Image 1 (cartoon, rainbow, N blue to C red):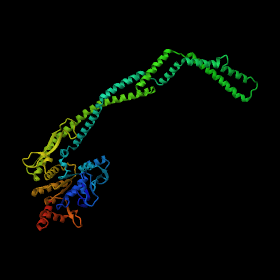
Image 2 (cartoon, rainbow, N blue to C red):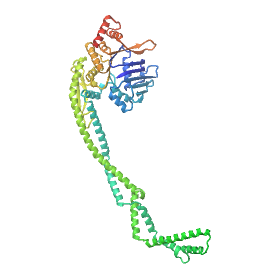
Image 3 (cartoon, one colour):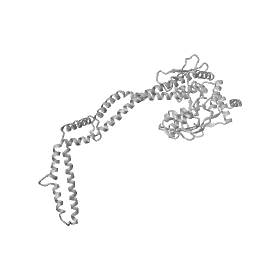
Image 4 (cartoon, rainbow, N blue to C red):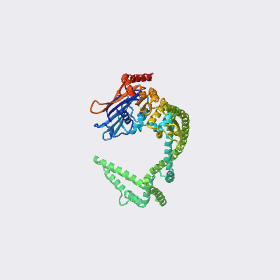
Amino acid sequence: MLVHLSIHNYAIVEHLDLELEGGMSVITGETGAGKSIMLDALGLTLGDRAENSVVRPGADKADILASFDIGDIPEARTWLAERDLENEGPCILRRVITAEGRSRAYINGSPCPQSDLRALGELLIDIHSQHEHQSLLKTDTHRRLLDEYAGASELARQVQLAAQRWRQTRHELERISRSSDEHRSRHQLLSYQLDELESLALGENELEQLEIEHKNLANAESLLAACRQVVELCSESDAGNVLSALTSSLNRLTAFPTQPTALGEAVTLLSSAQIQVEEAIGELNRFLDHFDADPERQQQLEERLDTIYTLARKHRVQPSDLANLQQSLLEELETLNADDEAAERLAEELTAYTRHYQEKASELSNLRARAADHLASAVEAEMQRLGMPGGRFSIQLRASQTDEPQHFGLEQVEFLVSANPGHPLKALAKVASGGELSRISLAIQVITAQTSRVPTLVFDEVDVGIGGPTAEVVGQLLRRLGERGQVLTVTHLPQVAAQGHHHLFVHKDRRSQETRTAVAKLDETPRIEEIARMLGGLDLTDESLAHARKMVTSAKG
Protein backbone atom coordinates (compact mmCIF):
# COMPACT_ATOMS: atom_id res chain seq x y z
CA MET A 1 0.00 0.00 0.00
CA LEU A 2 0.97 3.67 -0.30
CA VAL A 3 2.74 4.65 2.92
CA HIS A 4 4.29 8.02 2.08
CA LEU A 5 3.81 10.79 -0.47
CA SER A 6 6.28 13.65 -0.74
CA ILE A 7 5.59 16.61 -3.06
CA HIS A 8 8.02 19.49 -3.66
CA ASN A 9 7.39 22.55 -5.82
CA TYR A 10 4.42 21.08 -7.69
CA ALA A 11 1.75 23.58 -8.81
CA ILE A 12 0.86 25.57 -5.66
CA VAL A 13 2.43 22.97 -3.35
CA GLU A 14 5.82 24.09 -2.06
CA HIS A 15 6.45 21.20 0.29
CA LEU A 16 4.12 18.44 1.40
CA ASP A 17 4.83 15.19 3.24
CA LEU A 18 2.02 12.75 3.93
CA GLU A 19 2.16 9.57 5.97
CA LEU A 20 -0.68 7.29 4.90
CA GLU A 21 -2.24 4.26 6.53
CA GLY A 22 -4.44 1.34 5.59
CA GLY A 23 -8.20 1.63 5.62
CA MET A 24 -10.28 4.40 4.12
CA SER A 25 -8.73 7.87 4.09
CA VAL A 26 -11.01 10.72 3.06
CA ILE A 27 -9.59 13.92 1.57
CA THR A 28 -11.70 17.04 1.93
CA GLY A 29 -11.20 20.77 1.67
CA GLU A 30 -12.44 23.90 0.02
CA THR A 31 -12.65 24.11 -3.75
CA GLY A 32 -9.28 25.01 -5.29
CA ALA A 33 -7.31 24.10 -2.18
CA GLY A 34 -5.39 21.40 -4.02
CA LYS A 35 -7.15 18.11 -3.37
CA SER A 36 -6.89 16.99 -6.99
CA ILE A 37 -3.35 18.37 -7.19
CA MET A 38 -2.27 15.71 -4.71
CA LEU A 39 -3.73 12.96 -6.87
CA ASP A 40 -2.27 14.48 -10.04
CA ALA A 41 1.16 14.52 -8.41
CA LEU A 42 0.71 10.91 -7.35
CA GLY A 43 -0.24 10.08 -10.94
CA LEU A 44 3.14 11.41 -12.13
CA THR A 45 4.95 8.85 -10.00
CA LEU A 46 2.79 6.22 -11.71
CA GLY A 47 3.87 7.21 -15.22
CA ASP A 48 1.39 9.95 -16.21
CA ARG A 49 2.56 12.52 -18.76
CA ALA A 50 3.92 15.78 -17.40
CA GLU A 51 4.39 19.34 -18.63
CA ASN A 52 6.76 22.01 -17.37
CA SER A 53 3.73 24.07 -16.30
CA VAL A 54 3.40 21.82 -13.23
CA VAL A 55 6.58 23.30 -11.71
CA ARG A 56 5.77 25.86 -9.03
CA PRO A 57 6.58 29.41 -10.21
CA GLY A 58 10.09 30.39 -9.18
CA ALA A 59 11.30 26.79 -8.69
CA ASP A 60 13.74 24.99 -10.99
CA LYS A 61 12.04 21.60 -10.71
CA ALA A 62 9.15 19.65 -9.23
CA ASP A 63 10.04 16.51 -7.28
CA ILE A 64 7.42 13.90 -6.32
CA LEU A 65 8.18 10.71 -4.41
CA ALA A 66 5.79 7.89 -3.49
CA SER A 67 6.73 5.02 -1.16
CA PHE A 68 4.88 1.71 -1.18
CA ASP A 69 4.91 -1.25 1.18
CA ILE A 70 4.94 -4.22 -1.23
CA GLY A 71 5.23 -6.98 1.35
CA ASP A 72 1.80 -8.32 0.33
CA ILE A 73 2.19 -7.68 -3.42
CA PRO A 74 4.12 -10.66 -4.85
CA GLU A 75 3.55 -9.52 -8.45
CA ALA A 76 5.35 -6.24 -7.74
CA ARG A 77 8.24 -8.00 -5.98
CA THR A 78 8.61 -10.37 -8.95
CA TRP A 79 8.49 -7.45 -11.40
CA LEU A 80 11.28 -5.67 -9.53
CA ALA A 81 13.40 -8.82 -9.13
CA GLU A 82 13.22 -9.58 -12.86
CA ARG A 83 14.75 -6.15 -13.54
CA ASP A 84 17.26 -6.15 -10.65
CA LEU A 85 15.42 -3.23 -9.03
CA GLU A 86 14.48 -4.87 -5.74
CA ASN A 87 15.24 -2.94 -2.59
CA GLU A 88 15.09 -3.62 1.11
CA GLY A 89 12.29 -1.67 2.72
CA PRO A 90 9.63 0.26 0.80
CA CYS A 91 9.46 0.49 -2.97
CA ILE A 92 10.11 4.11 -3.96
CA LEU A 93 8.82 5.67 -7.18
CA ARG A 94 10.13 9.14 -7.98
CA ARG A 95 9.47 11.67 -10.72
CA VAL A 96 11.39 14.90 -11.36
CA ILE A 97 10.15 17.53 -13.86
CA THR A 98 12.37 20.51 -14.61
CA ALA A 99 11.20 24.01 -15.44
CA GLU A 100 12.51 23.44 -18.99
CA GLY A 101 10.12 20.49 -19.38
CA ARG A 102 12.55 17.60 -19.00
CA SER A 103 11.32 14.61 -17.04
CA ARG A 104 13.26 11.94 -15.16
CA ALA A 105 11.88 8.79 -13.53
CA TYR A 106 13.36 6.53 -10.87
CA ILE A 107 12.49 3.22 -9.25
CA ASN A 108 14.32 2.57 -5.98
CA GLY A 109 16.89 5.17 -6.98
CA SER A 110 17.64 3.71 -10.41
CA PRO A 111 16.78 5.74 -13.53
CA CYS A 112 14.05 4.12 -15.62
CA PRO A 113 11.78 4.89 -18.57
CA GLN A 114 8.37 6.36 -17.92
CA SER A 115 6.78 3.15 -19.23
CA ASP A 116 8.36 1.21 -16.34
CA LEU A 117 6.73 3.54 -13.81
CA ARG A 118 3.42 2.93 -15.54
CA ALA A 119 3.84 -0.86 -15.62
CA LEU A 120 4.85 -1.10 -11.96
CA GLY A 121 2.26 1.48 -10.90
CA GLU A 122 -0.56 -0.66 -12.31
CA LEU A 123 0.45 -3.39 -9.84
CA LEU A 124 0.46 -1.00 -6.88
CA ILE A 125 -2.44 1.42 -7.18
CA ASP A 126 -5.55 2.09 -9.23
CA ILE A 127 -6.78 5.67 -9.63
CA HIS A 128 -10.43 6.08 -10.56
CA SER A 129 -11.04 9.52 -11.96
CA GLN A 130 -11.66 11.33 -15.20
CA HIS A 131 -7.97 11.15 -16.05
CA GLU A 132 -6.14 8.96 -18.53
CA HIS A 133 -4.79 6.72 -15.77
CA GLN A 134 -8.24 5.11 -15.61
CA SER A 135 -7.52 1.40 -15.92
CA LEU A 136 -11.19 0.46 -16.05
CA LEU A 137 -11.39 1.75 -19.62
CA LYS A 138 -8.93 -0.94 -20.76
CA THR A 139 -10.29 -4.28 -21.93
CA ASP A 140 -7.18 -5.91 -20.46
CA THR A 141 -8.43 -4.77 -17.07
CA HIS A 142 -11.89 -6.21 -17.79
CA ARG A 143 -10.32 -9.58 -18.56
CA ARG A 144 -8.10 -9.47 -15.47
CA LEU A 145 -10.97 -8.60 -13.14
CA LEU A 146 -13.17 -11.37 -14.54
CA ASP A 147 -10.34 -13.91 -14.28
CA GLU A 148 -9.63 -12.88 -10.69
CA TYR A 149 -13.31 -13.09 -9.82
CA ALA A 150 -13.48 -16.55 -11.44
CA GLY A 151 -10.39 -17.69 -9.51
CA ALA A 152 -8.68 -18.29 -12.84
CA SER A 153 -5.69 -15.96 -12.66
CA GLU A 154 -3.16 -18.81 -12.60
CA LEU A 155 -4.95 -20.57 -15.44
CA ALA A 156 -4.93 -17.33 -17.44
CA ARG A 157 -1.19 -17.08 -16.88
CA GLN A 158 -0.75 -20.64 -18.16
CA VAL A 159 -2.79 -19.79 -21.26
CA GLN A 160 -0.61 -16.74 -21.87
CA LEU A 161 2.58 -18.81 -21.51
CA ALA A 162 1.20 -21.53 -23.80
CA ALA A 163 0.41 -18.93 -26.48
CA GLN A 164 3.85 -17.43 -26.06
CA ARG A 165 5.56 -20.82 -26.48
CA TRP A 166 3.41 -21.56 -29.53
CA ARG A 167 4.30 -18.23 -31.13
CA GLN A 168 8.03 -18.58 -30.46
CA THR A 169 8.02 -22.12 -31.87
CA ARG A 170 6.08 -21.04 -34.96
CA HIS A 171 8.49 -18.17 -35.62
CA GLU A 172 11.48 -20.51 -35.40
CA LEU A 173 9.80 -23.06 -37.68
CA GLU A 174 8.94 -20.33 -40.19
CA ARG A 175 12.53 -19.10 -40.13
CA ILE A 176 13.80 -22.57 -40.99
CA SER A 177 11.03 -23.18 -43.52
CA ARG A 178 11.64 -19.89 -45.34
CA SER A 179 15.17 -21.04 -46.14
CA SER A 180 14.19 -24.65 -46.93
CA ASP A 181 14.40 -24.20 -50.74
CA GLU A 182 17.79 -22.60 -50.41
CA HIS A 183 18.80 -25.35 -48.00
CA ARG A 184 17.77 -28.07 -50.45
CA SER A 185 19.84 -26.52 -53.24
CA ARG A 186 22.79 -26.10 -50.93
CA HIS A 187 22.36 -29.67 -49.69
CA GLN A 188 22.51 -31.02 -53.23
CA LEU A 189 25.60 -28.99 -54.05
CA LEU A 190 27.39 -30.04 -50.87
CA SER A 191 26.54 -33.70 -51.46
CA TYR A 192 27.93 -33.52 -55.01
CA GLN A 193 31.11 -31.75 -53.90
CA LEU A 194 31.68 -34.22 -51.09
CA ASP A 195 31.20 -37.13 -53.51
CA GLU A 196 33.94 -35.64 -55.72
CA LEU A 197 36.30 -35.20 -52.79
CA GLU A 198 35.56 -38.64 -51.39
CA SER A 199 36.08 -40.17 -54.85
CA LEU A 200 39.43 -38.38 -55.02
CA ALA A 201 40.38 -40.18 -51.80
CA LEU A 202 43.44 -38.03 -51.28
CA GLY A 203 45.70 -39.77 -48.78
CA GLU A 204 47.74 -38.14 -46.06
CA ASN A 205 50.98 -36.68 -47.50
CA GLU A 206 50.03 -38.19 -50.87
CA LEU A 207 50.30 -34.90 -52.74
CA GLU A 208 53.80 -34.23 -51.49
CA GLN A 209 54.95 -37.75 -52.41
CA LEU A 210 53.33 -37.53 -55.85
CA GLU A 211 55.02 -34.22 -56.60
CA ILE A 212 58.43 -35.57 -55.59
CA GLU A 213 58.03 -38.73 -57.64
CA HIS A 214 56.75 -36.78 -60.64
CA LYS A 215 59.67 -34.38 -60.47
CA ASN A 216 62.08 -37.30 -60.36
CA LEU A 217 60.49 -38.98 -63.35
CA ALA A 218 60.34 -35.74 -65.32
CA ASN A 219 64.12 -35.28 -64.80
CA ALA A 220 64.98 -38.97 -65.15
CA GLU A 221 67.66 -38.72 -67.90
CA SER A 222 69.47 -35.82 -66.29
CA LEU A 223 69.26 -37.48 -62.88
CA LEU A 224 70.68 -40.81 -64.14
CA ALA A 225 73.50 -39.05 -66.00
CA ALA A 226 74.39 -37.04 -62.91
CA CYS A 227 74.41 -40.17 -60.72
CA ARG A 228 76.64 -42.10 -63.16
CA GLN A 229 79.02 -39.17 -63.44
CA VAL A 230 79.31 -38.93 -59.66
CA VAL A 231 79.99 -42.70 -59.40
CA GLU A 232 82.69 -42.41 -62.06
CA LEU A 233 84.32 -39.43 -60.34
CA CYS A 234 84.27 -41.17 -56.99
CA SER A 235 85.42 -44.68 -57.96
CA GLU A 236 85.66 -45.60 -61.67
CA SER A 237 87.65 -42.96 -63.53
CA ASP A 238 91.04 -44.29 -64.70
CA ALA A 239 92.33 -40.77 -64.83
CA GLY A 240 91.80 -40.53 -61.10
CA ASN A 241 88.91 -40.76 -58.73
CA VAL A 242 88.06 -39.71 -55.21
CA LEU A 243 88.26 -43.17 -53.64
CA SER A 244 91.59 -43.92 -55.27
CA ALA A 245 92.99 -40.58 -54.11
CA LEU A 246 91.85 -41.21 -50.53
CA THR A 247 93.36 -44.70 -50.51
CA SER A 248 96.66 -43.43 -51.91
CA SER A 249 96.73 -40.62 -49.35
CA LEU A 250 96.20 -43.00 -46.44
CA ASN A 251 98.89 -45.36 -47.72
CA ARG A 252 101.40 -42.54 -47.87
CA LEU A 253 100.68 -41.26 -44.37
CA THR A 254 100.71 -44.69 -42.71
CA ALA A 255 103.85 -45.95 -44.47
CA PHE A 256 106.20 -44.61 -41.82
CA PRO A 257 107.14 -46.89 -38.86
CA THR A 258 106.79 -44.02 -36.47
CA GLN A 259 104.09 -41.50 -37.03
CA PRO A 260 103.94 -38.09 -35.41
CA THR A 261 101.02 -37.69 -33.06
CA ALA A 262 99.88 -34.55 -34.85
CA LEU A 263 99.11 -36.59 -38.02
CA GLY A 264 96.87 -39.09 -36.22
CA GLU A 265 93.80 -36.87 -36.44
CA ALA A 266 94.32 -36.31 -40.16
CA VAL A 267 94.61 -40.07 -40.76
CA THR A 268 91.39 -40.64 -38.82
CA LEU A 269 89.47 -38.07 -40.86
CA LEU A 270 90.72 -39.46 -44.16
CA SER A 271 89.70 -42.96 -43.09
CA SER A 272 86.20 -41.67 -42.22
CA ALA A 273 85.97 -39.88 -45.57
CA GLN A 274 86.99 -43.07 -47.39
CA ILE A 275 84.23 -45.02 -45.64
CA GLN A 276 81.60 -42.34 -46.36
CA VAL A 277 82.55 -42.13 -50.03
CA GLU A 278 82.28 -45.91 -50.32
CA GLU A 279 78.82 -45.80 -48.71
CA ALA A 280 77.70 -42.95 -50.98
CA ILE A 281 78.84 -44.93 -54.03
CA GLY A 282 76.81 -47.88 -52.76
CA GLU A 283 73.69 -45.75 -52.38
CA LEU A 284 74.12 -44.31 -55.86
CA ASN A 285 74.59 -47.75 -57.40
CA ARG A 286 71.52 -49.07 -55.66
CA PHE A 287 69.49 -46.07 -56.89
CA LEU A 288 70.77 -46.67 -60.45
CA ASP A 289 69.96 -50.38 -60.23
CA HIS A 290 66.36 -49.81 -58.99
CA PHE A 291 65.38 -46.59 -60.72
CA ASP A 292 62.61 -47.22 -63.24
CA ALA A 293 62.04 -44.38 -65.70
CA ASP A 294 58.62 -45.76 -66.60
CA PRO A 295 56.75 -43.45 -69.03
CA GLU A 296 53.41 -45.04 -68.08
CA ARG A 297 54.03 -44.34 -64.41
CA GLN A 298 54.87 -40.77 -65.26
CA GLN A 299 51.61 -40.40 -67.18
CA GLN A 300 49.67 -41.87 -64.25
CA LEU A 301 51.30 -39.38 -61.92
CA GLU A 302 50.48 -36.49 -64.22
CA GLU A 303 46.84 -37.57 -64.49
CA ARG A 304 46.53 -37.95 -60.73
CA LEU A 305 48.11 -34.55 -60.07
CA ASP A 306 45.94 -32.93 -62.76
CA THR A 307 42.82 -34.28 -61.06
CA ILE A 308 43.97 -32.88 -57.72
CA TYR A 309 44.94 -29.46 -59.15
CA THR A 310 41.71 -29.17 -61.16
CA LEU A 311 39.53 -29.87 -58.11
CA ALA A 312 41.53 -27.35 -56.08
CA ARG A 313 41.02 -24.66 -58.74
CA LYS A 314 37.32 -25.49 -58.88
CA HIS A 315 36.97 -24.78 -55.15
CA ARG A 316 39.46 -21.91 -55.25
CA VAL A 317 41.75 -23.39 -52.66
CA GLN A 318 45.34 -24.59 -52.61
CA PRO A 319 45.74 -28.31 -53.43
CA SER A 320 47.13 -28.83 -49.93
CA ASP A 321 43.87 -27.44 -48.46
CA LEU A 322 41.55 -29.98 -50.10
CA ALA A 323 41.42 -32.15 -46.99
CA ASN A 324 40.40 -29.16 -44.83
CA LEU A 325 37.79 -28.21 -47.43
CA GLN A 326 36.31 -31.68 -47.32
CA GLN A 327 35.98 -31.50 -43.54
CA SER A 328 34.39 -28.03 -43.73
CA LEU A 329 31.82 -29.14 -46.32
CA LEU A 330 31.02 -32.19 -44.25
CA GLU A 331 30.35 -30.04 -41.17
CA GLU A 332 28.09 -27.68 -43.17
CA LEU A 333 26.16 -30.62 -44.57
CA GLU A 334 25.67 -31.97 -41.04
CA THR A 335 24.35 -28.54 -39.99
CA LEU A 336 21.81 -28.60 -42.82
CA ASN A 337 20.79 -32.08 -41.82
CA ALA A 338 20.39 -30.82 -38.25
CA ASP A 339 18.11 -28.00 -39.51
CA ASP A 340 15.93 -30.59 -41.25
CA GLU A 341 15.74 -32.57 -38.04
CA ALA A 342 15.00 -29.35 -36.11
CA ALA A 343 12.15 -28.52 -38.50
CA GLU A 344 10.60 -31.93 -37.87
CA ARG A 345 11.05 -31.53 -34.12
CA LEU A 346 9.59 -27.99 -34.15
CA ALA A 347 6.58 -29.15 -36.16
CA GLU A 348 5.91 -31.82 -33.54
CA GLU A 349 6.36 -29.29 -30.72
CA LEU A 350 4.02 -26.83 -32.45
CA THR A 351 1.33 -29.48 -32.62
CA ALA A 352 1.83 -30.31 -28.95
CA TYR A 353 1.75 -26.64 -27.91
CA THR A 354 -1.42 -26.08 -29.95
CA ARG A 355 -3.11 -29.01 -28.20
CA HIS A 356 -1.92 -27.81 -24.76
CA TYR A 357 -3.13 -24.26 -25.47
CA GLN A 358 -6.55 -25.46 -26.63
CA GLU A 359 -6.97 -27.53 -23.48
CA LYS A 360 -6.04 -24.69 -21.11
CA ALA A 361 -7.86 -21.99 -23.07
CA SER A 362 -11.05 -24.06 -23.23
CA GLU A 363 -10.89 -24.62 -19.48
CA LEU A 364 -10.42 -20.88 -18.97
CA SER A 365 -13.34 -20.08 -21.27
CA ASN A 366 -15.64 -22.31 -19.24
CA LEU A 367 -14.64 -20.57 -16.00
CA ARG A 368 -15.14 -17.14 -17.57
CA ALA A 369 -18.55 -18.04 -18.94
CA ARG A 370 -19.75 -19.27 -15.54
CA ALA A 371 -18.36 -16.25 -13.68
CA ALA A 372 -19.42 -13.54 -16.15
CA ASP A 373 -23.15 -13.67 -15.38
CA HIS A 374 -22.59 -13.75 -11.61
CA LEU A 375 -20.18 -10.80 -11.70
CA ALA A 376 -22.44 -8.79 -14.02
CA SER A 377 -25.48 -9.36 -11.77
CA ALA A 378 -23.57 -8.37 -8.64
CA VAL A 379 -22.18 -5.19 -10.23
CA GLU A 380 -25.59 -4.25 -11.60
CA ALA A 381 -27.10 -4.60 -8.13
CA GLU A 382 -24.46 -2.28 -6.67
CA MET A 383 -25.11 0.24 -9.47
CA GLN A 384 -28.76 0.40 -8.42
CA ARG A 385 -27.70 1.21 -4.88
CA LEU A 386 -25.26 3.88 -6.11
CA GLY A 387 -27.83 6.17 -7.59
CA MET A 388 -28.10 4.64 -11.03
CA PRO A 389 -31.67 3.25 -11.01
CA GLY A 390 -32.41 1.23 -14.12
CA GLY A 391 -28.73 1.01 -14.98
CA ARG A 392 -27.60 -2.27 -16.51
CA PHE A 393 -24.27 -4.02 -16.64
CA SER A 394 -23.18 -6.91 -18.83
CA ILE A 395 -19.96 -8.77 -19.62
CA GLN A 396 -19.46 -9.66 -23.26
CA LEU A 397 -17.30 -12.65 -24.19
CA ARG A 398 -16.42 -12.15 -27.84
CA ALA A 399 -14.79 -15.08 -29.63
CA SER A 400 -11.40 -14.38 -31.16
CA GLN A 401 -11.39 -13.79 -34.91
CA THR A 402 -8.34 -15.98 -35.48
CA ASP A 403 -7.59 -19.64 -34.92
CA GLU A 404 -4.07 -18.83 -33.78
CA PRO A 405 -3.43 -19.05 -30.03
CA GLN A 406 -3.75 -15.62 -28.43
CA HIS A 407 -2.32 -14.55 -25.09
CA PHE A 408 -5.79 -13.61 -23.80
CA GLY A 409 -7.40 -16.97 -24.60
CA LEU A 410 -10.26 -17.87 -26.90
CA GLU A 411 -12.28 -14.69 -26.34
CA GLN A 412 -12.01 -10.98 -25.65
CA VAL A 413 -13.69 -9.70 -22.49
CA GLU A 414 -15.46 -6.34 -22.47
CA PHE A 415 -17.67 -4.61 -19.93
CA LEU A 416 -20.87 -3.13 -21.35
CA VAL A 417 -23.06 -0.67 -19.51
CA SER A 418 -26.29 1.25 -19.84
CA ALA A 419 -26.25 4.10 -17.35
CA ASN A 420 -29.85 5.14 -17.97
CA PRO A 421 -33.10 3.16 -18.37
CA GLY A 422 -34.02 2.40 -21.96
CA HIS A 423 -30.52 3.01 -23.33
CA PRO A 424 -28.76 0.13 -25.12
CA LEU A 425 -25.69 -1.53 -23.66
CA LYS A 426 -22.49 -0.02 -24.99
CA ALA A 427 -18.78 -0.16 -24.26
CA LEU A 428 -18.00 1.35 -20.86
CA ALA A 429 -15.65 3.99 -22.28
CA LYS A 430 -18.33 5.27 -24.69
CA VAL A 431 -21.23 5.55 -22.30
CA ALA A 432 -20.33 6.56 -18.79
CA SER A 433 -19.65 10.13 -17.72
CA GLY A 434 -16.84 10.81 -15.27
CA GLY A 435 -19.04 10.54 -12.20
CA GLU A 436 -20.91 7.52 -13.52
CA LEU A 437 -17.65 5.82 -14.41
CA SER A 438 -16.33 6.37 -10.90
CA ARG A 439 -19.45 4.85 -9.35
CA ILE A 440 -19.43 1.89 -11.76
CA SER A 441 -15.76 1.42 -10.89
CA LEU A 442 -16.67 1.50 -7.25
CA ALA A 443 -19.37 -1.13 -7.78
CA ILE A 444 -16.92 -3.39 -9.62
CA GLN A 445 -14.17 -2.91 -7.03
CA VAL A 446 -16.52 -3.69 -4.16
CA ILE A 447 -17.45 -7.00 -5.78
CA THR A 448 -13.94 -7.95 -6.86
CA ALA A 449 -11.99 -6.49 -3.93
CA GLN A 450 -11.42 -9.85 -2.27
CA THR A 451 -9.72 -11.18 -5.38
CA SER A 452 -8.12 -7.98 -6.72
CA ARG A 453 -4.34 -7.87 -6.87
CA VAL A 454 -4.24 -4.04 -6.59
CA PRO A 455 -4.09 -3.13 -2.89
CA THR A 456 -4.59 0.65 -3.10
CA LEU A 457 -7.64 2.26 -4.69
CA VAL A 458 -8.04 6.00 -5.26
CA PHE A 459 -11.44 7.53 -6.02
CA ASP A 460 -11.51 11.14 -7.12
CA GLU A 461 -14.93 12.65 -6.36
CA VAL A 462 -16.99 9.50 -6.90
CA ASP A 463 -19.91 11.36 -5.34
CA VAL A 464 -20.34 13.79 -8.22
CA GLY A 465 -24.02 14.17 -9.04
CA ILE A 466 -25.37 12.20 -6.10
CA GLY A 467 -26.64 13.02 -2.65
CA GLY A 468 -28.87 11.92 0.16
CA PRO A 469 -29.17 8.17 0.82
CA THR A 470 -27.05 7.30 -2.23
CA ALA A 471 -24.15 9.34 -0.86
CA GLU A 472 -24.34 7.38 2.37
CA VAL A 473 -24.27 4.12 0.40
CA VAL A 474 -21.18 5.31 -1.46
CA GLY A 475 -19.47 6.05 1.82
CA GLN A 476 -20.41 2.64 3.23
CA LEU A 477 -19.07 0.86 0.14
CA LEU A 478 -15.80 2.78 0.29
CA ARG A 479 -15.44 1.94 3.96
CA ARG A 480 -16.02 -1.76 3.14
CA LEU A 481 -13.24 -1.54 0.57
CA GLY A 482 -10.98 0.20 3.08
CA GLU A 483 -11.45 -2.63 5.56
CA ARG A 484 -9.85 -4.99 3.03
CA GLY A 485 -7.02 -2.73 1.89
CA GLN A 486 -6.32 0.94 1.37
CA VAL A 487 -8.75 3.48 -0.11
CA LEU A 488 -8.08 7.17 -0.73
CA THR A 489 -11.10 9.20 -1.77
CA VAL A 490 -11.60 12.89 -2.52
CA THR A 491 -15.12 13.92 -1.57
CA HIS A 492 -17.37 16.93 -1.10
CA LEU A 493 -20.11 14.99 0.70
CA PRO A 494 -20.26 14.73 4.49
CA GLN A 495 -22.01 11.34 4.21
CA VAL A 496 -18.87 9.96 2.52
CA ALA A 497 -16.38 11.83 4.71
CA ALA A 498 -18.01 10.48 7.88
CA GLN A 499 -17.31 6.90 6.82
CA GLY A 500 -13.51 7.32 6.66
CA HIS A 501 -11.09 5.63 9.01
CA HIS A 502 -8.77 8.63 8.55
CA HIS A 503 -9.43 12.22 7.52
CA LEU A 504 -7.05 14.52 5.60
CA PHE A 505 -7.98 18.19 5.31
CA VAL A 506 -6.50 20.16 2.40
CA HIS A 507 -6.43 23.92 2.76
CA LYS A 508 -4.61 26.99 1.50
CA ASP A 509 -1.93 28.45 3.75
CA ARG A 510 -2.04 32.23 3.33
CA ARG A 511 0.32 33.18 6.12
CA SER A 512 3.04 34.19 3.65
CA GLN A 513 2.81 36.38 0.57
CA GLU A 514 2.44 33.27 -1.58
CA THR A 515 -0.55 30.93 -1.40
CA ARG A 516 0.50 27.39 -0.59
CA THR A 517 -1.36 24.12 -0.18
CA ALA A 518 -1.18 22.41 3.20
CA VAL A 519 -2.63 19.15 4.49
CA ALA A 520 -3.65 18.40 8.06
CA LYS A 521 -4.54 15.00 9.50
CA LEU A 522 -7.67 15.61 11.58
CA ASP A 523 -8.30 13.94 14.88
CA GLU A 524 -11.72 13.59 16.53
CA THR A 525 -12.77 17.19 17.23
CA PRO A 526 -11.40 18.93 14.11
CA ARG A 527 -12.84 16.13 12.03
CA ILE A 528 -16.35 16.63 13.42
CA GLU A 529 -16.01 20.37 12.81
CA GLU A 530 -14.97 19.75 9.17
CA ILE A 531 -17.92 17.44 8.57
CA ALA A 532 -20.23 19.99 10.23
CA ARG A 533 -18.83 22.65 7.88
CA MET A 534 -19.57 20.34 4.93
CA LEU A 535 -23.11 19.95 6.25
CA GLY A 536 -23.96 23.56 6.99
CA GLY A 537 -21.41 25.94 5.54
CA LEU A 538 -18.82 28.13 7.26
CA ASP A 539 -20.90 28.90 10.35
CA LEU A 540 -20.88 25.97 12.74
CA THR A 541 -24.02 25.44 14.80
CA ASP A 542 -24.82 23.13 17.63
CA GLU A 543 -27.16 21.29 15.32
CA SER A 544 -24.57 20.77 12.58
CA LEU A 545 -21.94 19.67 15.09
CA ALA A 546 -24.35 17.21 16.70
CA HIS A 547 -25.34 15.87 13.30
CA ALA A 548 -21.69 15.46 12.31
CA ARG A 549 -20.86 13.69 15.57
CA LYS A 550 -23.79 11.31 15.05
CA MET A 551 -22.67 10.51 11.50
CA VAL A 552 -19.11 9.68 12.61
CA THR A 553 -20.34 7.59 15.54
CA SER A 554 -22.80 5.73 13.32
CA ALA A 555 -20.05 4.93 10.79
CA LYS A 556 -17.88 3.41 13.52
CA GLY A 557 -20.75 1.26 14.67
